[in-house]
Image (cartoon, rainbow, N blue to C red; front, side, top):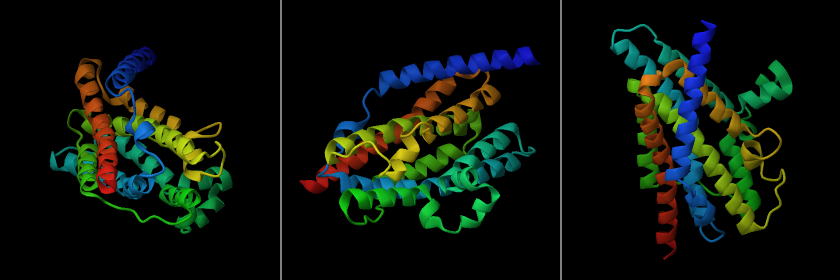
Length: 262
C-alpha cells in the first residue's frame, strides 16, 4: 500500500511538472502584467471585483452539482465528489475569511464570522481599491465576466474524466499568476512599496507565507488520488483548458477597458 502511494505521488508529480511546463510555454506572459495601468485600473478592477465576490458561491455551488450528478448516475457519493467537496469547501471557507479567523483566534474567532466586511477576501480587495483610488468601485459583471463565470461553474461541476479537478487546478494555478501580475502592475502604476497596506494582495502573494501557493499545492494533491497515470495526457489538456478560460477572461476585461477609453 505504501509503495502504491509512492508510485501515485510520483506519477502526480510528473503530471504537475509537465502541466507547469506547458502552462509556461503556452501562457508565458500574463495580460495583467503589461495590460493594466493607472488609466484603465478602475474599469478592470470592477470586473475583477465581481469575479472575486462570485467565486466562493460558484465553488460552493459546484460542490452541490457534483454531488447531485453522482446521485443521478445511481452511485453513492464517490471519491471524486468527496475529495473535490473537501478541497472546494476549504477554498470557500478561506475566501469568506473563516480559515484566517480560526488560525489567528481559534474557535472564538468563529464568533466574528458575521462581520463579513472584515473577513471576505472580496472585501479586502474593496479596501485595497479605496487605498489606491481614494474611492469605492462597484463590482461590474460585464458580458465577458458573465460568460466566464457561467463556464467556470460548468467546469467546476463536471466530474466526468475529472474535469472538475482539472478546472480547480487550472483556476488556482492561474490565480497565482494573475494576482502576481496584478500586484506587479499596481506597484508599477501607483508607485507603492511592497508592504501591508494592500491587504488583499499581501494576503495572497505577499509576506512570508502567501496563501495562493498553498491553494495550488492543495488542489494538485487531488491528482494523486483521482487521476490515473493512463489519463495523464488527457487530464493535462483539460487543465490547460481550465487555465485558458481564466487567462482569456483577463484578456477580455482588459480589451473592454481599452474600448471604453477610446
